[in-house]
Amino acid sequence: MRHLVKTLLGFAVLLTPAVAPAATIVGGDTRVAFGAAITGLEASLLGSASLVGGAPGLTVNFPITGGTLDAALAGAIRHDGSGISLSNGTNTLALSNFVIDTTAGILFGDAALNGTLVGTALDLFSFDLSTVTVPQLTDLDNPLLALTIRPTASGALTAAFGLGETAGATLGLAATAPQLAAVPEPGSWAMLVIGFGLVGGSIRIRQARTYGSVTA
Image (cartoon, rainbow, N blue to C red; front, side, top):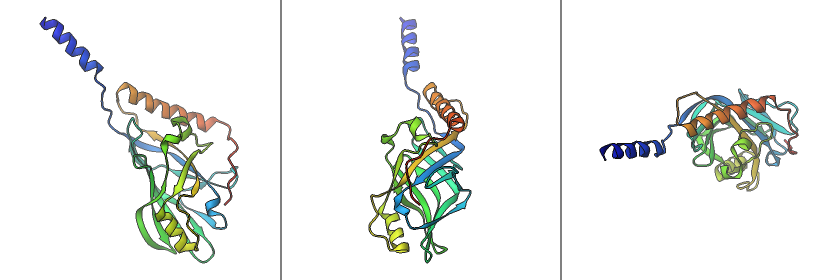
């Protein structure tokens, strides 16, 4: 009887789901194909941001510099030292140091108007991860995640360029492919890490697809 109890307890331990800790992000890229919301404005890249050659419209790569993600994709993806500035010839609005908060569904960032810091970690854009699968989210060649302008960003655009109400409008489409550090994890989490690695490798060798039309 005692042996049976020990055996049952052993099975219970094996069948109990393990809670996977968050994994550290060590690199990768986030890509944004900007849409009509910035039509008529001159765009410049800041820091380590780079233009995606061959893509129509304005498509920008923002290097991922850190953060954490757990098995449920909850966490933060950081992009320190890069950004984009928009200008109408009179005023320049710079947005930088983006942080993708996957739990809140908000992209935060710093904003500066004509070189003067307006605020840090402002809630600029929102997104809904339920609208894309993990392979779609990480496919840099075909950004599909819509970034919606929040009231904070709308107010900054209005103050800088006199634009009308833009809250709720789509800024553009995004994809993000974070590289996770290799750490010992439960099976399900390990498979997710491997999946990110495989997707990241495949998008580097895949022939670039045609982007949807965007106008800068």
